[in-house]
Amino acid sequence: MSHRLFRALAPAVFLLLATLPLTAQATELKYDHRVAGDRALTIRLGPIFPQTFQAFDGTTAATHLTMGGTMSIDLDFYLNDSFRLGGGLKGKATTSPNEATLFMVPITFRAIWEPKINHFSFPMGLGAGFSFTNFRTYTSFDPTLIPTAGAFWNMSSSWSFGLEASQWIVFQPVYGGTAPASDGRIAYFADLTIGAIYHF
Amino acid sequence: MLFLLAASCTSGTEGIFASIEREQKVVALGGLSSTASVTSMAELSGQYFATGGKALFARSTATGTTKWTNATVGRNTQVVAVGTAGGKLFAIAGGVLYRAVDASVAVTDLVWNAVDLGSGDTAENLVPVRQGDGVTSNELIVVSNTSGVHNNIYRLEGTSGALSAAIVLPVVAPFGVQSAIFDGTNYYLLSETSITRMTSSLVATEVLKSNVYGHDFAGILYLNGTSAVGNHAGYYLTTMSNASVGGGLYKATTMPSFSALTTSIQISSNPASLGTMLYNKDNDHVWIGTVAANAVTEGRGYVEIVLSSDTLSTVPFTGSNNYTSTVLPTSAVGLLFRSSTGLYFLGTIANGLWTWNSTGTATTSTWSQQ
Image (cartoon, rainbow over all chains, first blue to last red):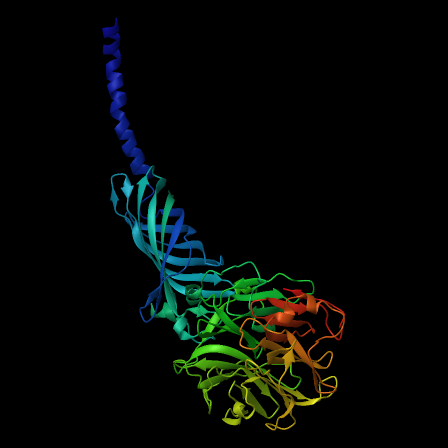
């Protein structure tokens, strides 16, 4: 009885099992949102580490800033399967020895190359733009470069999760105002963030 | 990239990152100690500032406020002098002259810019330039030394606080300029060994040596006779004591022709040096801080010149008050200061800062320690 039942059901079971990979492949091909014309919305959160201040004559000095926090949101557009262009808004806060807060809000245009291996993507690229900088009663508008690299697990066609590291390079030349030109500095910060990318 | 650099824009009087780089944690010591030495004081933007070799102390000028807060200057806890010139706050710490970007903020939030003296000079002291009423000073003399020699001074002028070029003194005194006045025409700069006249174009000439009087000079004061209560005009000069002979008090109506009012002051039968002077424009007396002979931290309190008779009273402020029951009569008084509202301060060596709790001509009040 049981043999007869197995023989009767086996073709159906094999047929059902055989269709599963085909179904998965068809879904992936149909819904993968990491191809030309798609968009990627990235949000990140993590610590940021002040590294050094560098004068324009090349000398460097300690920042005296504490480790801070950063968060960001980016919107990129895929030009092909592994290259996207977009823009980003970041924010960070760190504190000085006397607990005054240094706020920085960089707005950058980004170019990201994103090679993929199996279920992982490795976005790396460069953002260039400006930072709004505020400290005590001072404000500044500073040219900024942010190279970045990360590793993300593509959990589904729409969602990726991973880690990303960015180097902030903020140029603050001083000229034309009441501050001395010798106060010009380049500030270096590094952040390490966890991120989620929504592809659509 | 060039475009990005060209588009940078920074507000304020210093670079943000540079100011953070210079910032150091403020040292909070909990206020003025009863054993602090206070030798320098200033008032600006609703705050009093005081120092005497430790951190910079400050408190609000608001009536009833007594809490002092302290802070470093630049990255230094050794703040030796504070003063105002041209409406700006200056301080000397670690051999560097600093100017506060904005004196109206809390002392722990003050941002300081170093002011370079140039010529390899190290800033050593700030001397207020007392003017016609013997109280007002909106200029400062920066005493500097070069390899330990006090041959240069600088002036921080009264309009914008701008620093002059180095002014070469004709005579080098061991401790530099101690006291300064401006009589409307000339500056007179007093060191322990001489008095130097300096024109308004900053040319300095020695006019009097202290060996004429047998004692080192200690202080100088000028009253122009118009703003004083009793309209007393003249120049007053004090001298140091030696082990057995007290300091003297001299007066001139034209510089530098001094005549003695008293040549050897004794307080409680002890010779005392007469030092810094301040005109009490409220009761028409001149106050003089004293230092005991051959002692740095011990003193004889303060005494007064009664201007109506040009006599020296060793029983100061003769109204009913607690002066004699405090440590003041045995304190070395190195600072006399009158606030814009008429509050008087005595800065002592190692016995803290004291204030007379009334303004104006009141003589029946009390001294209290800050």
